[in-house]
Amino acid sequence: MSTLLAIEVEFLRNSQVEQALDLRAIRSLQRTLANGQKKKFAQTLELSKKVVSVANWFTSEEGKQATAEAGIYWNNETIGLKVFGWQKSYYYKVVKAGKLDDVIIEEFNRLCDEAEANGDEPNRSLEGLLKFTRSGGNTTTETGGEESEEGESEETTERAIEVRVPTIFTMTYKGGEKNVSVRINEENEVTTTNSREEILAAIEFLTNLI
Image (tube, rainbow, N blue to C red; front, side, top):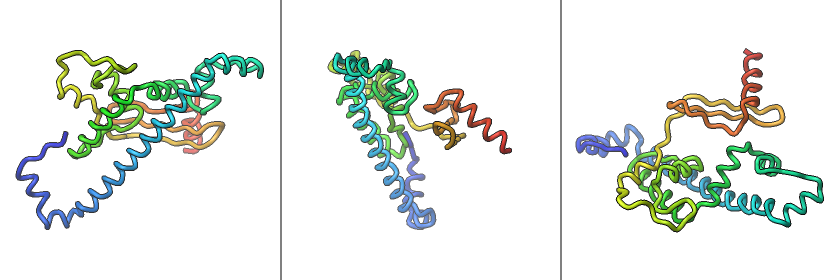
């Protein structure tokens, strides 16, 4: 959470400083970006609910019969790849998010809103939501309904909202059978939906050019 000293607050409120730094325009752009992230996150959650419906259909008797008659035998990994074009790890993340109780999502969004109001940049994303649930910051369990352990402080809950770590490396490769996208932050955490082989192929392409 951002904390400013009284003299720092007064400095930034100074009309000359505000004009010199164009702070009003900056704040406006920050709000626009935050609203865009909110919309994208809401759409991701909407998609996750539909993905759960797809997963449930494939495991239903109707789905099993339909695939068997077509001579298709898909497990969870191949469903994610064949239907959505996702690697197994990302597919499971989407399904997991789609099964979360609405109370958990509302609490996550509330804390993200509070973080933004305090000048922080919360990780309002699928990854941020799942980290939030794993941290124990939610007020109910992942399957919904049960309260968290007594004694959990509000401070612990607020810490569960991850502030986005700055990115130090990005790579995007549009070629071959599938696009490759890789992002690494300052904590050396790698974010990608591609396999090691796909990433190595992209690196080989780059190496051959330079």
